[in-house]
Length: 144
Figure (tube, rainbow, N blue to C red):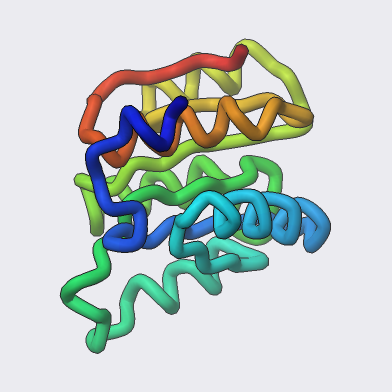
């Protein structure tokens, strides 16, 4: 089982989930929290950037992974990825979308996303990507 194989303390790392669909935020946060992750949700990239720029972050909690939808406004998932890579280059970003386009998967890989998921996806696939990201495996994982 994934929990047994993971040697990291999930509570040390913050998982940020960004999506403009409230139902998706609720689904992912409930799933991840039930598995012991510390999760914070944002309805836009702008909200995420405000949180990430705050000076007083808990030094014991690291931003481990950002899971973001691609198709959002005003800043899409690729804009979010580019900004995160500049300001927090060690933070893994997993992009997800309801539009299954090979060009987007290729672009995500090229621009440095840790992973790419096409909605709907098995929640276990997201959990596997999170484990890999938090364990520091620097590889790209395409869709299932």
